[in-house]
Image (cartoon, rainbow, N blue to C red; front, top):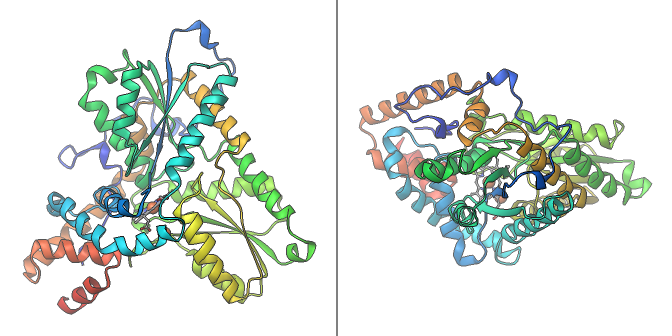
Length: 444
Ligand SMILES: C=CC1=C(C)c2cc3[nH]c(cc4nc(cc5[nH]c(cc1n2)c(C)c5CCC(=O)O)C(CCC(=O)O)=C4C)c(C)c3C=C
Ligand SMILES: [Fe+2]
Ligand SMILES: [Fe+2]
């Protein structure tokens, strides 16, 4: 079968360009994470107009939005990477996949009230961040929200930023850990927007800087650790006597990691760092949720781990959503409904879910510090951020592309499937359209 491979920081280079653009200081000597600065000039000393652009995924607000949202998601080459020969028909395929998946997805959204709360919560976070910046000496800072797959789209936010005459822009993806499929995808869109209007987005006009990841910040880890400790504190001694903290991160296909996505490593480091603050005597584990389709995703899978823990006789699970900073379908439906049901059915007696950070005061305050530190450091441009994050990815990516190309050629040479057929069936197989899976089995 023709495989799906991630684009591997594809915004960095087109297939004809070959090498990634080189960046200032070599990757090894630059850290992705924002460092603290000793002295920051007060805002009144400069005439800059500070803007912060929060990037997030977005979600359907009403049942009738679901198919359109899925269409946007599956049109993204950072979510589904088709072999080059099929990329011109990605829009068509995305439409087919969205149509096939929409009923299942819509039912999930209906179980949490019909739509995703991600837009409302992200806007509230933006307002809270603006207040935090005001308290920290930046009363004129404006915070904008740019979503990748639903309103308000990144393009809309960028238009606002331009209209408001922002002169210094801090780009902050609301994903603590970097993945090609999340921050990478959002940055790729921003890179395209900026390149289409260089007149506006050149450094002399609007000086922008990107924060690529921030899972290692003390403030973030502290905020996570206090939420976990608070949750544990609500348990009785008996419940605590048979308890494990289970981090559940959103998964990605394993091929992403093979192509150099730093996501898994950052998730692992993050959970370890948080648990060092909670206390070394607390047992914990890490697993991955929300896989889509039959390809291999990061493991262990959350449902499998729940079953294993229950079988081992564990009675209390404290579940921590990691990789998200707001409630949304994957926490409210997948964890709170599906995994809770599974756990209780398998013999877990207490299933306690730690809330997402949301408007947590120390978290928002740390976001404020992060913005101020980032604006005072030398700028990291979108293009550079993507190149920097790509790091070691190049070799692995080439391997994936070669394998994929070879597979496609074999399929075409065998004459068993028309090119379109391969695309539709592979895409639907990947996403889990059962009829397509059956068809694919029959044909192959
Ligand atoms: C760090 C977070 C996320 C990663 C990594 C990620 C990768 C990823 N996601 C899909 C497919 C889907 N994701 C969907 C919803 C969704 N995904 C994230 C976060 C990450 N995704 C969030 C926050 C949400 C929810 C948004 C909301 O509406 O509240 C969906 C839609 C829901 C569904 O139908 O299940 C899909 C599909 C892939 C394929 C992928 C990596 C390649
Ligand atoms: Fe997702
Ligand atoms: Fe899900």
